[in-house]
Length: 442
Image (cartoon, rainbow, N blue to C red; front, side, top):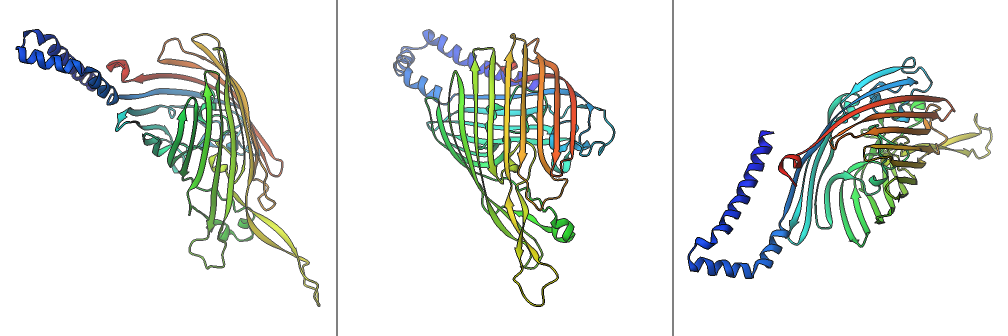
């Protein structure tokens, strides 16, 4: 607080100094008055330069606590603070009996951002973190990088939302993870927006994302081999998107083309290695109905795109092709043998939500989402096949910086062998936001 006050005081002092100089002109010599007059004649040019170099800076974030209760079903303990249907217990009872309660502050967020004009182009930069541990920190309260990028004019470099993703269809929910059937990934990238005017924009990007390789039944045939196969990222992913929007909402179409590589490190050359082509198309949009309601929806389909999905699926998995043995004498002990090949796994994702603004303080969001995977014939019976996600909430914001409310969530996971698991959850949230602009002004 003291730091912000000091910065604000410095800004006010600089502003006062300029003001004092302008007001004292009548007491200066004639030469100074003539100089001031000359400056005033060229004021438009100076004003334009000042406008072009104007910068904006903000420290922002919020502190949030969630009270989460699984009433009917259980989630993987590492993901109890996020509603991910792919992590629901299958079979039921896998993670214990029904019913579990937790408190979480992992959604709390801190960020800094700046923007301005330089060299005839606009610029912006953002660094943002939250405390939701993933990967090795799954289940822990740990620092997680969300955004770290800079943009100057049409060029953006750093980590932010994938160009394949449409963040504008994420609904007004308080669950951390959100609908499973939408594309959602923040990834390091190099992006160029070559059109951005009159509500229309078009961009391309090179992005990096890790591959999710499922070795399937290879683990049963040869456990050592199944555990040795790794993804190989030899080329970046290529993404592109076009968007058109206005006061009515927006429509957007994006696509991805990627090479999904795999290899067996430290093994002889005869062990599996190679690459396959993945692709996807994502059609999304939002549509405003006055100030009362907004529909947010999207449909995504592709092969080998699970890495980019919000939840569920795998990029690459083995397929078994039976190959007849030529007739010989004496006959072999088996009539067929299997040839395995790597297959980009087809996936369909759908998300549809409606955000309601009942009053200036009361809002709701209701919707449904699904991920459906077309598994290969050499994946294990307990492999993820389909997941559904549905939620509804009522949120209250009594004042600008405070939000509280409750959300009901239901999810179901289905495995390749038909085994199902479900979870019914209620989440209560209390959040207080902050911004340095509250102290420093805009």
